Length: 163
Image 1 (cartoon, rainbow, N blue to C red):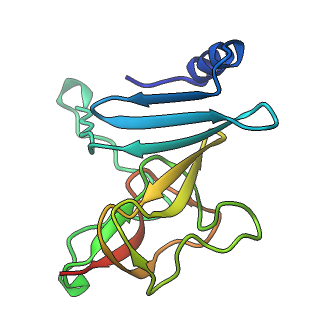
Image 2 (image 1 turned 30 degrees about the horizontal axis):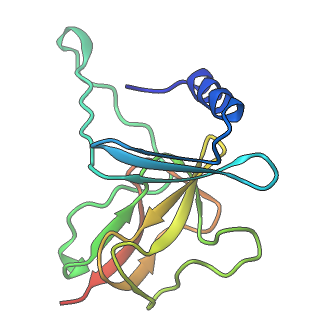
Image 3 (image 1 turned 135 degrees about the vertical axis):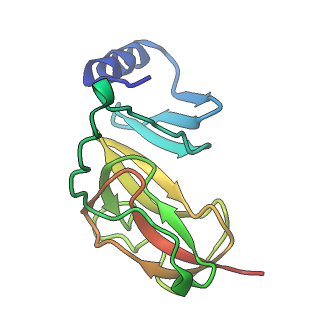
């Protein structure tokens, strides 16, 4: 199921009309937490729980269209990575290394992380989506520059897992 901009606007309008300050929604595919900010807007954190597979067959047996170039590349098996684990963008959007302009980055190369460590934010449709390391280890490489556009599934960084 895909949500349109109007669907999101309708959901936010319903939330604005309710007296609640928080919403926590969890499905088998994702978890979404919303909190009312002091200024009346909403802050958001989401986490993709499972990696859904999307298959788009070509109509009438025609060959599928060639993929368009995307910012940030999806990680492919690379023997030179020596067991490193990619951290991929959960959604397409703008990759941010810090929680706000001028703040220190969430992580730097060489930093120790756990599965739940927030390592970046991907902004999609004005919503900030926290990106978690997903594995325990050290940050080996950060692949995108701050404020660079990332495609869904693009490799944001590599983590060298610890034994």
